[in-house]
Length: 259
Image (tube, one colour):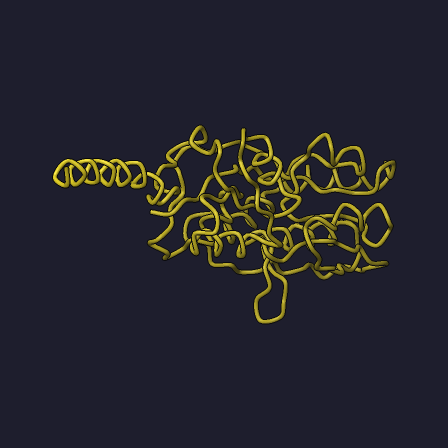
């Protein structure tokens, strides 16, 4: 009888081990594509495209963070199974981090544009004309090479010597390298250089207001900022509150997981 009980106990123990092994395995290791995000815990930056995409995944739990740094840190600490974020920012955030990797297949391609107050057609037309000009004369391509190209040197744009009247207030979130980040107390990046080039054409000074990404659209509607430039993609929800220029850069949303 005792021998029979011992055999049964061994079987139960083995079954328990087999069923528990899968649960103890790092969930991030099971993610090799977007399809594997179903039912997982996903970290995102609040108010971003990544946050929206994560919310559309079946049975996924979405953890929202103030910025991408916090989301990636949560991934490292195994508080989330994956992070959805802009591709270029993803590479910046996991640079020299062998514990994390970016899945090869992007989730969604998106185009970034400048947001401005709804109905301000005059400003919108000026901005569109300037972006067209900066594309044609190579200024945007040159800025891109300094921040996004192969081996970028992060050299900031040098403003032109022009007469300036008035100030353009730019709302941004300096937690989104290489588009904007705070370095030694100064906000720099692709979007900052773009805004400075725009101000050269407008003949205006540039004032930067740093805030949470989720507050940028509101700041424009409340006239606390003239434009929002922060790697902002055009979405139907955002278009209900602000207008957008033509796109000035293209990027993708990607998935970061643990190795």
